[in-house]
Image 1 (cartoon, one colour):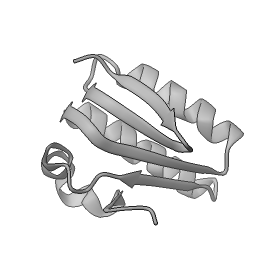
Image 2 (cartoon, rainbow, N blue to C red):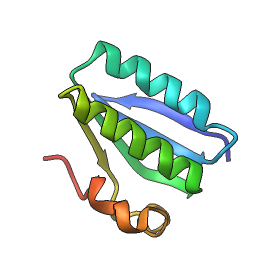
Image 3 (tube, rainbow, N blue to C red):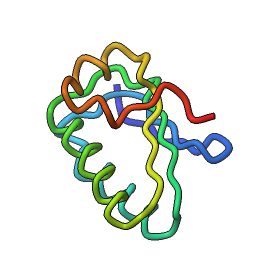
Image 4 (cartoon, helix red, strand yellow):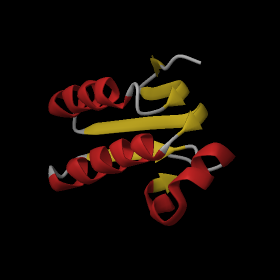
Length: 98
């Protein structure tokens, strides 16, 4: 499944696969969003597959946002695909935002 990114009332939703083939464009997209915004809420509820490259990109984006003193929330901890892939770095995942 191709990667799809949509803005749903301020929550950026990712659907599809976050894998090595698309992590570069994903990283560029979110770096651009971070340069224009102080807050990003990212939902990974609809991610069907994520590999180590995808975990690394999301972790790097999260850490970079923290260094810039920006809010970068990744919601979707209930998604088993995400939960299993993140393993020990699952501390960056949130169950919800509200």
